[in-house]
Amino acid sequence: MKKIIDNSSLKLLAMLAMLIDHIAWVSFPLATNMNILSPNWPANSMHIIGRLAFPVFAFCIAEGYRHSHDVRKYMRRLGLLALISIIPFSLMGWVTGLGFIMQNTVVTLFLGLCALYYSDQQTATWRKVLIILLCFTLSIIADGGLTGGVFGIYAFAKIKDPIFRKIGGVLVLNSVQILILAFNFSYDGLADLAATCLLFLLVTSFYNGQKGANIGKVFYWFYPLHLLALSLFRIAFLLFLM
Image (tube, rainbow, N blue to C red; front, top):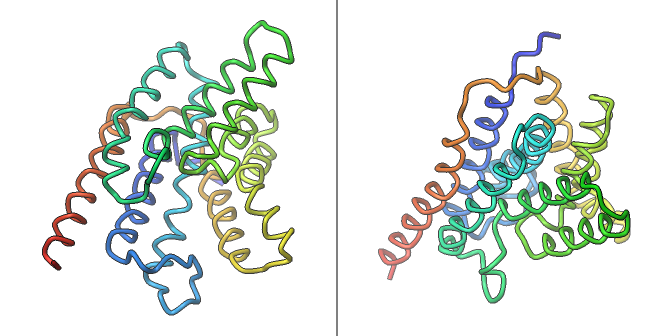
């Protein structure tokens, strides 16, 4: 199998999936049941495609950590992006109360990167465990937090075998959802979850480990600007209906 997808291509693919998902949220706000067989299947199909975005971004964060020459600079950029994205994310109408401070996907990615960085520092083991648990706890109120994002990013970075790294990482990433389904003896959403995992494994099976074109700034501009554009469209549409 020819490896034709580099890191930059993965990020662009994740951005496209995220955009499709967010367009669905704005265009079909009441179609929230992510079941491709439901009557709202056009919107739900877009959401299922969108679910590919977070595991790919999480994988890219882990890859960036493993290959970065300046992790602190990487953390600062991601942390700044999380702060800048607070207002655009909130304007989408997804956040209320204290969630205003924390809730956007980049916060979870940033916390996962922090957990990776501090886990490799020369300090007591109990401190490392405490920091990782703190990052996970904070991520619970962030978008993506309930998917086990911090531990998933950690697994993507720390599992040595390239095949098991992807399988283990995506399973850990979705571990909370898997446990909830198992605890409730529910099959609702299981097929969609499995489809997302398999799609992620299929896409990353073509990953060649190369950096690719330098598109770092593209992602840093894309995330807040596409949220801002969609939120302004949403607000204008609501005003039109009034």
